[in-house]
Amino acid sequence: MIPHSASPTDAVWRAGLGACPGAGGAVRFRLWAPRRQQVELVLDPRGPERRRQSLSRGPEGMWADVLDDVAVGTRYAYLLDGEGPYPDPASRFQPDGVHGPSMVVDPRAFAWSDAGWRGVPLDRAILYELHVGTFTAEGTFAAAAAKLPYLADLGVTVVELMPVAEFAGSRNWGYDGVSLFAPSHSYGTPDDLRRLVDEAHRLGLAVLVDVVYNHFGPDGAYHALFSPFYLSALHQSPWGAAVNLDGEQSGPVRAFFIENALHWLHEYRMDGLRLDATHGLADTSPRHFVAELVDCVRTSVTGRKVLLIAEDERNLTTIVRSAAEEGWGLDAVWADDFHHQVRVLTAGDRDGYYQDYSGSIDDLAAALRRGWFFCGQPSSYTGRPRGTDPAGVPPERMVICIQNHDQVGNRPFGRRLHHQIDPASYRAASALLLCAPETPLLFMGQEWAASSRFCFFTDHHADLGRLVTEGRRAEFSRFAAFSDEAQRARIPDPQAWSTFDRSRLRWSEQTQADHAGCLELYRALLRLRRRERALQPGGRLEMVVLDGFGLALARLPESGDGLLVVVCLKGSGTYEHARSGPDVPGARWEVVLSTEMPGFLSSTERGQDGGPEIDAAGSLAIRFSRPSAVILKRR
Image 1 (spheres, rainbow, N blue to C red):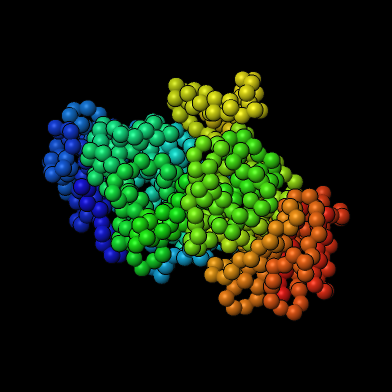
Image 2 (cartoon, rainbow, N blue to C red):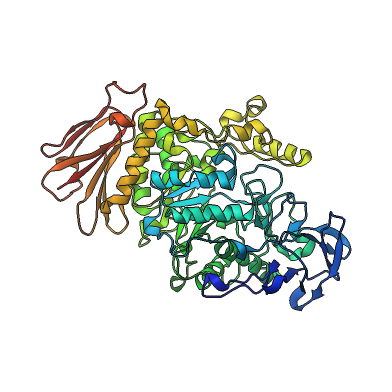
């Protein structure tokens, strides 16, 4: 099995794979190729000083050698039984892309300034998901780092980067990554990414990176040439052959991915990982791969908080239960049921998996109370029961949203929620998200109701690109609106530059009248979430359904003032506290925020009637003429 560091501190991390500079300028090259008879290192493979060096075979098919005269920045590749040269499966940088040579990188050379950084605990986490290539006009790590002061001022506490590992082409969501240890050269250098993390820590922001361990991308994955055991002979995944986590020679494969996780946490000082689609990790081993990964991370990284979050559609409490409870031990899991109920309720979605959701206020309330909606009920979409009972799981261990990259980008035209519903409904849904007891996630630009869409985009070579385009359009053929081929042809071509370009944020919008009010609302809601003890984990939630039009949530801390959040999500209605409850201790009511305050409205809405009428002088009555939310405190 490939050894990975089990060291107690970041300072003594030592990688087991790749080109690893050591003391005195020596570089150790190490890789796994169990079926190969000869492995040769090729230095400067495209240059005039091309040099070959045979590596020595060790136990379990490991090949290694130490060279004393290799400078940092040297390009290298491998010949396998005379074939190649191929890039290193554990390359730290691919400056010429996935098919080019790898580069020797020294992660120890970076001058960090975050010695006192200890991370952000889950109970303070407000996540902001961004895609480096579309977050700014430049689409680089450096440009994203320049926006971090904005994010800190906005009030988020954790930046979640969509996958940054090297992928084929110049643009991609990142889930087609193949050089999993190498930050994409399209975004900048490894040190550019380190500077982003260092700057985030200076500002009090944690940084998570999205990692993909359920499959390799379709172009540039040379792993199977080094070892056929990287891919499973037993399981398939939605993306082709599954990664081999439980078959012959699966031990070194598991260790490869665990080392990858530790590399991001040590070499880049990431504050955690978002594990993509853990439901796609086929593993029948007595100890699941994710549980092993979590244990290795907890052993290896100490002295600072590291958050481990799964994306998993199955609603399994196993994911967040501790090892003592026979769980995997992750900190949190994406819980999509809240998003789906909100989408159906506000936008009326019915295609695909949305057919499982009624969008009723009662079912939305159930998702909020439990953290997710499906707790074992049969799914009409899959024809199978889905979910487990999350009783006893703290709500902050569920990550909820009203937008994320999947729920926007996997729509035919990349439309965001606010592109399909009226601004008042969007403000009300935003308030509910940020006042809920679960951990909230924002998707880049939602805070100012960005006009840009987020489409699915790729930049593959022509033959593969054609298949991606055809597959993308065929995917929607079962949707009623796209049963006709001519309608499917309207779906943006993932390969087109224009599809990528329309997905980039337009930052100048923030000061425009139709967007500035929404941004101010998000700033105000995030301030409340940070400052009000009632909106932080640890207290009680009491909730009542309001005659099919909304919800009243009482957030009650163990000590201090409670908050009442009354949300009208559809139509109109009247809330009378004395009749409906819930109980909030105190003598008099004080309005903290209404989503219809003039400063939160667009220019076309200001001066119009429609905000809630609030009578807080007595027992409290709120008359809603349209969707909105009111937050009140009782003293």
